[in-house]
Length: 222
Image (cartoon, rainbow, N blue to C red; front, side):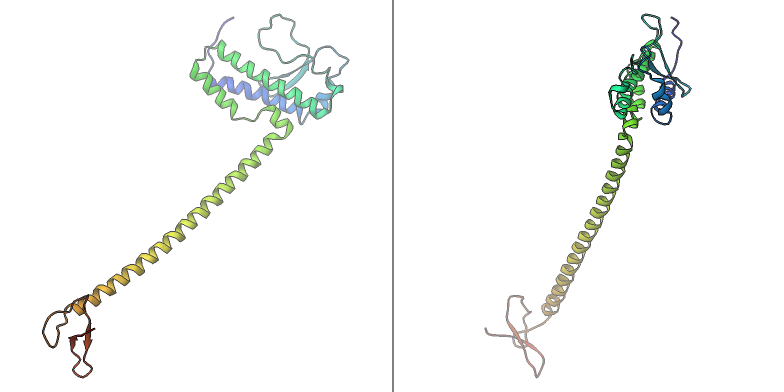
C-alpha cells in the first residue's frame, strides 16, 4: 500500500464531503434512503463519499477491508423501530465510521500528535450527524445565542451600574471637597481676624463675639 502524503486540510475536506452526503441521505433524501433499506435484502451499509453523495450498498467482499467500513445491516432494524429512532441509530454509527475513516487516513499518512489534534479540533467544530438529524444542533445554536445575548445584557447592566456608582461617588467626593474648601475659607477669614481688645489672632477653638456697633471681633466669655 503506497502512502501518499496528504495534509490535515485534505483529510478534513474528505470528512466534510462524506458527512454532507450522509446528512443528505438522512434528511432531504430520507424517503429514498428509507425505501432502499429493505429489510428483506442482505446486510446493507450507508456510504458517504467525498463528493457529497451517498449510497446504500452491500459491504465490500475484501476481508479485511482496505478502509474502515460503515456498520452492517442497517436495513434489518428499520421496521422494528420508530423511524426517527432508526434514523438516529444510523446517524450515530455514521459518526463513528467517519471518525474512524479520518483517523485511519491520519495514521496512513503519518500524522503526528499535532496533526491529529488539529484534525480532531476541525472535526469537533462541526455538529455531529446525530445532532443534525435529531435537531440538537439547532437547539445548541439557539442556546448559544441566548447565552450570548444574556451575557451582553448582563455586561451592559454591570457597566451601567458601575457608571452610576462611579457617578454617585464622584458627586459625593465633589460635595466633600466643596465643604472642606468652604471650611478652609472660613478658617482663613477668621485666622486673619484680630481681637479688638487684645490684638491676638482668632483661634478655631475659641469663642468670639462681634460688636454690632463697631463691627469688630472680641474674645468672648463662655
